[in-house]
Length: 180
Image (cartoon, rainbow, N blue to C red; front, side, top):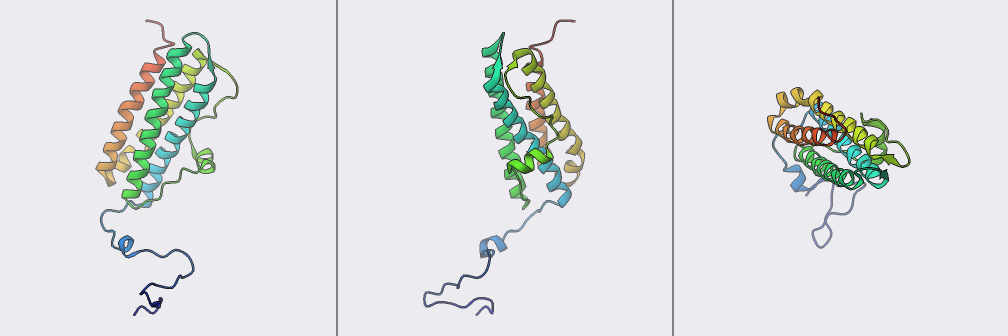
Protein backbone atom coordinates (compact mmCIF):
# COMPACT_ATOMS: atom_id res chain seq x y z
CA UNK A 1 0.00 0.00 0.00
CA UNK A 2 1.16 3.52 -0.86
CA UNK A 3 2.34 5.41 2.22
CA UNK A 4 0.73 8.61 0.93
CA UNK A 5 -2.73 7.17 0.47
CA UNK A 6 -4.89 4.84 2.44
CA UNK A 7 -7.76 2.92 0.98
CA UNK A 8 -11.39 3.09 1.87
CA UNK A 9 -13.53 0.00 1.88
CA UNK A 10 -14.15 0.55 -1.84
CA UNK A 11 -10.40 0.68 -2.62
CA UNK A 12 -10.48 4.41 -3.26
CA UNK A 13 -7.84 6.81 -2.13
CA UNK A 14 -8.76 9.33 0.49
CA UNK A 15 -8.67 12.83 -0.90
CA UNK A 16 -5.40 14.60 -0.30
CA UNK A 17 -4.58 18.27 -0.32
CA UNK A 18 -4.45 19.64 -3.85
CA UNK A 19 -4.66 17.85 -7.17
CA UNK A 20 -2.67 14.70 -7.66
CA UNK A 21 -1.46 13.36 -10.97
CA UNK A 22 -3.31 10.31 -12.18
CA UNK A 23 -1.58 7.15 -13.27
CA UNK A 24 -2.44 8.09 -16.87
CA UNK A 25 -0.76 11.48 -16.51
CA UNK A 26 2.28 9.91 -14.92
CA UNK A 27 2.43 7.49 -17.84
CA UNK A 28 2.81 10.32 -20.39
CA UNK A 29 6.00 9.89 -22.32
CA UNK A 30 7.51 11.37 -25.40
CA UNK A 31 8.96 14.66 -26.48
CA UNK A 32 8.42 17.53 -24.08
CA UNK A 33 8.90 21.15 -25.05
CA UNK A 34 11.77 23.05 -23.50
CA UNK A 35 10.93 26.28 -21.71
CA UNK A 36 12.29 28.17 -24.70
CA UNK A 37 10.01 26.30 -27.12
CA UNK A 38 7.06 26.77 -24.80
CA UNK A 39 7.78 30.51 -24.50
CA UNK A 40 8.07 30.85 -28.28
CA UNK A 41 4.75 29.15 -28.89
CA UNK A 42 3.15 31.21 -26.11
CA UNK A 43 4.23 34.37 -27.95
CA UNK A 44 2.50 33.17 -31.11
CA UNK A 45 -0.57 32.09 -29.15
CA UNK A 46 -1.17 35.45 -27.46
CA UNK A 47 -0.76 37.34 -30.74
CA UNK A 48 -3.26 35.04 -32.46
CA UNK A 49 -5.76 35.46 -29.63
CA UNK A 50 -5.28 39.24 -29.72
CA UNK A 51 -5.70 39.25 -33.50
CA UNK A 52 -9.03 37.46 -33.17
CA UNK A 53 -10.21 39.88 -30.46
CA UNK A 54 -9.16 42.98 -32.34
CA UNK A 55 -10.60 41.56 -35.55
CA UNK A 56 -13.96 41.18 -33.81
CA UNK A 57 -13.77 44.70 -32.36
CA UNK A 58 -13.10 46.16 -35.80
CA UNK A 59 -15.76 43.87 -37.34
CA UNK A 60 -18.41 45.33 -35.01
CA UNK A 61 -17.36 48.94 -35.56
CA UNK A 62 -16.30 49.24 -39.20
CA UNK A 63 -18.25 51.75 -41.33
CA UNK A 64 -17.94 53.26 -44.78
CA UNK A 65 -17.31 52.40 -48.40
CA UNK A 66 -16.99 48.67 -49.07
CA UNK A 67 -18.38 47.94 -45.61
CA UNK A 68 -19.76 44.53 -46.54
CA UNK A 69 -16.55 43.29 -48.19
CA UNK A 70 -14.47 44.53 -45.26
CA UNK A 71 -16.91 43.01 -42.78
CA UNK A 72 -16.65 39.63 -44.53
CA UNK A 73 -12.84 39.81 -44.77
CA UNK A 74 -12.72 40.45 -41.05
CA UNK A 75 -14.74 37.26 -40.51
CA UNK A 76 -12.05 35.34 -42.44
CA UNK A 77 -9.29 36.81 -40.29
CA UNK A 78 -11.16 36.05 -37.08
CA UNK A 79 -11.89 32.48 -38.14
CA UNK A 80 -8.27 31.82 -39.15
CA UNK A 81 -6.79 33.37 -36.01
CA UNK A 82 -9.12 31.39 -33.72
CA UNK A 83 -8.35 28.14 -35.54
CA UNK A 84 -4.60 28.79 -35.40
CA UNK A 85 -4.73 29.78 -31.72
CA UNK A 86 -6.45 26.49 -30.94
CA UNK A 87 -3.90 24.56 -33.03
CA UNK A 88 -0.98 26.24 -31.24
CA UNK A 89 -2.48 25.69 -27.79
CA UNK A 90 -3.22 22.04 -28.50
CA UNK A 91 0.29 21.52 -29.88
CA UNK A 92 1.67 23.04 -26.69
CA UNK A 93 -0.38 20.58 -24.62
CA UNK A 94 0.78 17.70 -26.81
CA UNK A 95 4.33 18.73 -25.87
CA UNK A 96 3.42 19.00 -22.17
CA UNK A 97 3.61 22.80 -22.21
CA UNK A 98 0.94 24.99 -20.66
CA UNK A 99 -0.75 27.51 -22.98
CA UNK A 100 -2.04 30.64 -21.27
CA UNK A 101 -4.84 32.46 -23.04
CA UNK A 102 -6.21 34.36 -20.07
CA UNK A 103 -7.26 37.88 -20.98
CA UNK A 104 -4.81 39.58 -18.61
CA UNK A 105 -1.91 37.53 -19.98
CA UNK A 106 -2.88 38.26 -23.58
CA UNK A 107 -3.21 42.00 -22.86
CA UNK A 108 0.12 42.14 -21.04
CA UNK A 109 2.19 40.10 -23.50
CA UNK A 110 0.87 40.63 -27.03
CA UNK A 111 3.11 42.43 -29.48
CA UNK A 112 0.13 43.85 -31.37
CA UNK A 113 -0.72 47.53 -30.91
CA UNK A 114 -3.88 48.47 -29.03
CA UNK A 115 -7.09 48.60 -31.03
CA UNK A 116 -8.75 52.03 -31.25
CA UNK A 117 -12.13 52.61 -29.66
CA UNK A 118 -15.23 53.66 -31.61
CA UNK A 119 -16.24 53.47 -35.23
CA UNK A 120 -13.49 52.75 -37.71
CA UNK A 121 -13.59 53.80 -41.36
CA UNK A 122 -13.13 50.93 -43.78
CA UNK A 123 -9.84 52.37 -45.14
CA UNK A 124 -8.50 52.66 -41.59
CA UNK A 125 -9.78 49.17 -40.73
CA UNK A 126 -7.89 47.75 -43.71
CA UNK A 127 -4.64 49.43 -42.65
CA UNK A 128 -5.17 48.49 -39.00
CA UNK A 129 -5.79 44.81 -39.75
CA UNK A 130 -2.92 44.65 -42.24
CA UNK A 131 -0.61 45.96 -39.53
CA UNK A 132 -1.89 43.33 -37.06
CA UNK A 133 -1.63 40.48 -39.56
CA UNK A 134 1.92 41.54 -40.36
CA UNK A 135 2.63 41.68 -36.62
CA UNK A 136 1.51 38.08 -36.13
CA UNK A 137 3.61 37.03 -39.12
CA UNK A 138 6.61 38.84 -37.64
CA UNK A 139 6.19 37.01 -34.32
CA UNK A 140 6.03 33.66 -36.15
CA UNK A 141 9.16 34.52 -38.10
CA UNK A 142 11.01 35.72 -34.97
CA UNK A 143 10.51 32.41 -33.18
CA UNK A 144 10.69 30.15 -36.24
CA UNK A 145 14.37 29.21 -36.35
CA UNK A 146 14.58 28.30 -32.67
CA UNK A 147 11.32 26.34 -32.91
CA UNK A 148 12.52 24.54 -36.04
CA UNK A 149 15.82 23.63 -34.37
CA UNK A 150 14.06 21.99 -31.43
CA UNK A 151 10.91 20.65 -33.07
CA UNK A 152 10.42 20.65 -36.86
CA UNK A 153 6.84 19.41 -36.44
CA UNK A 154 5.90 22.53 -34.50
CA UNK A 155 7.76 24.62 -37.10
CA UNK A 156 5.48 23.08 -39.72
CA UNK A 157 2.52 24.54 -37.82
CA UNK A 158 4.21 27.95 -37.97
CA UNK A 159 4.63 27.50 -41.75
CA UNK A 160 0.90 26.90 -42.12
CA UNK A 161 0.08 29.93 -39.98
CA UNK A 162 2.50 32.12 -41.92
CA UNK A 163 1.16 30.99 -45.26
CA UNK A 164 -2.43 31.92 -44.38
CA UNK A 165 -1.71 35.05 -42.32
CA UNK A 166 0.51 36.50 -45.05
CA UNK A 167 -2.10 35.63 -47.67
CA UNK A 168 -4.76 37.42 -45.62
CA UNK A 169 -2.47 40.43 -45.21
CA UNK A 170 -1.95 40.64 -48.96
CA UNK A 171 -5.66 40.27 -49.71
CA UNK A 172 -6.77 42.80 -47.10
CA UNK A 173 -4.07 45.36 -47.91
CA UNK A 174 -4.97 45.21 -51.62
CA UNK A 175 -8.23 47.00 -50.72
CA UNK A 176 -6.33 50.25 -50.16
CA UNK A 177 -3.60 49.89 -52.78
CA UNK A 178 -3.49 51.72 -56.05
CA UNK A 179 -1.74 50.24 -59.06
CA UNK A 180 1.90 51.23 -59.52
